[in-house]
Length: 219
Length: 248
Image (cartoon, rainbow over the protein chains, first blue to last red):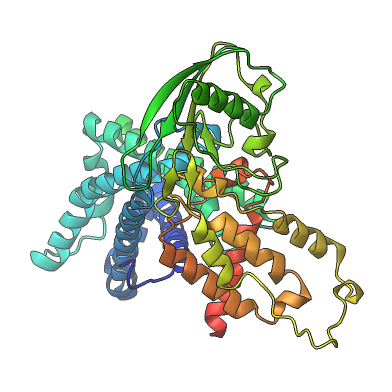
């Protein structure tokens, strides 16, 4: 993949663009999920629309999957290249003296988020694809809320989701503002972008945790 | 001051190096780090041992020759200074100090603490200049009015001494801060705009061909840079590169 995108700056820009795309998707995902806390009917309505709309299913969804795959594969490729750029390691290296743990360990937080996505796909996406496109079961517009709450009956799963969202938060704390820097945005708006980034990086994962815990306690 | 020095010793680029320990005393807190290294070398010479090879020239923070990774940081624990400007008062009596060369695949060790930074020269050759017609009709640069803020930013970028601390400290060994400073100092001025497209494309290509790592915006380079080159320059490099790619 790094051969396809030859320049290091283009690789950086492509990581930033795919990251921003995923940030926008995550916001949309959150808005739909949080509706489940307030109204069963609204959640079912929104989920039914997302689950049956042609554009969402056959255009947006494949683009999203490609975006996720690109971001993760490119992340690992870049990490491999970066490791090779220093063959002999330092005997003493004080990384914390000049950069945050989060910014130095995006690959770790990213890998945890990737593992979580595996679990999330196993929980929601695979049964959904199975329901609609493999077993061709009849569509029930009111099934979504029950399916969601059923998934959060297991405490272990709620804990796993909460830990994963913690790592997602760490990933976003650096990733959000870093994406804009990669796109060349470093000006009078940078402090505002950093503030929005912090609010987003803490608020959205916290919101997802809240949804999981809310349904667990409600059950 | 009494110190224990753990110094990287390596005969040449082919042989493997290792850390060797030296005890040293009677070090004045007012000495510069390089003066302390001179004292160590005198001691080693008297003892009939091979002195530690290290780069140095101006010893006043201008040339960018001195390149030591001290106690896990490029140019040591002080900020906005090169190794030659670092003083021994920044260390404690009895302390153990680790001294290593700047490490990157693109900075191979020549001997001990001396590394080959000619990859920076090759990047500079690829476009870090302006082509001036010397026929005698060239307009005096001082007669071209330039916005104060732009002139200041260009000057700030031009203070980069190419010491390589950005590469040494970056966990990815990225040279993006160096290249961005060299691109910025011309991109902001009217004289540099004419060749801006070729300059940024060629310099970035050379940087990639040399094998430097990718920038992940950790910001370590900005913190360790002895001249305080800002990350704003990397953002400008990205903008210049995207613009140039679209144009070309």
